Image (cartoon, rainbow, N blue to C red; front, side, top):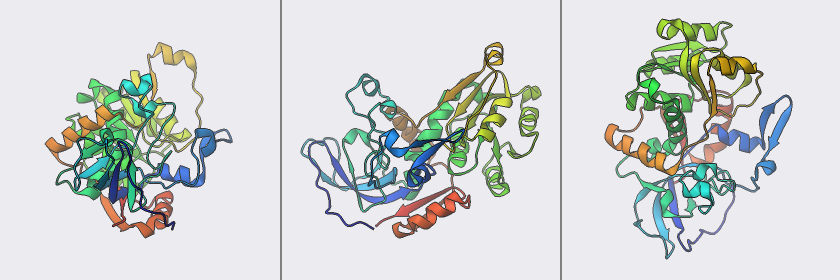
Length: 339
């Protein structure tokens, strides 16, 4: 616990009193201080430009309690979702709307102080989205698990309107991805996880089928579940381990796309000629853009919040929540409530 004076906004800044702050698996990497790269290699926080001390928490909903003199279009008392994936706002990447890919990121809870706090400062109103009467605890995960999986589903392309998408991982991201896939009107999903409890949760949430990722024939099982047994057109890997990558890549059809999102860590060796001969795509997907967040919020306004299990806890239980997340005991999402 750290006590600090309540910050005062200047310029275009907006101060939010935090109502809900989601707990994300990415926070565990920050807490550990590194990312596993495979082969015994690690990416340290400082190498990524993350400096300590840092208040984590990047899935935030809060009430506007103070405005800088240049903060326009936001009203005191409004309940806002804070889009946390912020860049410098000035480079060509930011100007085209892809601030999440900026070389000098300012992401809330990652590169700047986040929402595991009573208050969080947002640098500009363009990062704020009014949630209206939506449940803050259920809306908060849209800032990461929502926009991250929405962006990945969009990268899968129109093919998943007619063909099932494969989702690897049935944790908070996986169940969000499953729910959004349905809301977007896509065909359906085959969900892969090593945990029976999470597979059961995915099946209950509407998965077309579930597969044990630890099964030696997991890739073959996935292929059998696709049309004609030919393989998957799109695999979204929300784990990102060596094992999950192997399963995902090996289950692809000719012309298929393997989209990696998860940061669990590891590496994979693949032969290069078959990538060309089979016209395969290996694509990274990192978070989502501000325009995509606006698109996601419009989808939520039309279809309602994604049906994902959410458990709320007081902020002082943050360490216990992270330990349970690390142990794989969390189904859905935990959201902290500082107020």
